[in-house]
Image 1 (tube, rainbow, N blue to C red):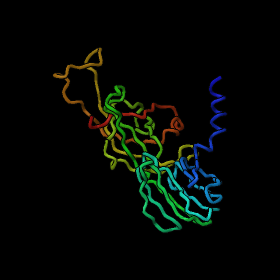
Image 2 (cartoon, one colour):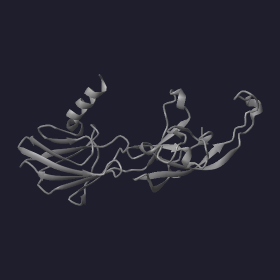
Image 3 (cartoon, helix red, strand yellow):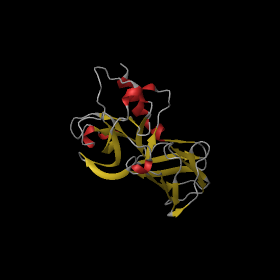
Image 4 (tube, rainbow, N blue to C red):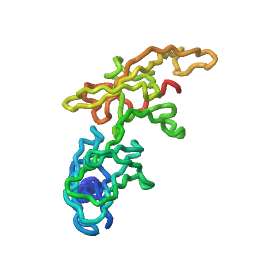
Length: 245
């Protein structure tokens, strides 16, 4: 009784999640190929948006009709990006997100104008708030808007036990590959694996007697979360312990 009506409600209002308008212009909130046609002060403002987001983070906005007045075109800057590069008709223009988190380009637009907004897609290492007990001292990986995960399939071992990830973003190298029929950018890095041999029937050791835990080098291939379980059955985790604790 809950989910089907909510899906119908979402589909019926989907256009408002992607774009909205004021009397001064149009605001783009989400990025997908679409056409936006909206009367604003002075006339009709019409845009064609083309992008392969989230796999390619460049968004091309072509103006197909504009009023004979200055109009504001606002583009949301995702929190993961924080910045953007912008070209207008092939020429770079200065662009800084305003306090509302949007890039605002205000001008008298003409049919044929093309605004291209690019967001930097790079590997990022995330830490949780220390108050989240279950994943304290762990890290997760993101690239652009995509969350990544690690499967045992990509580590050369049957399990993820003892695996620890580096926190230096420079340790992660991009690797293009296909998972099924989906081309993706994977993140490869050299990690470490702790070898823990319990001294007794309980998985605890006296700190004074434990000594250093031996480690081995391990190669890890992190993949976008949405592609997991396509390379055979294996363990999967998003949050893994960090190698620096």
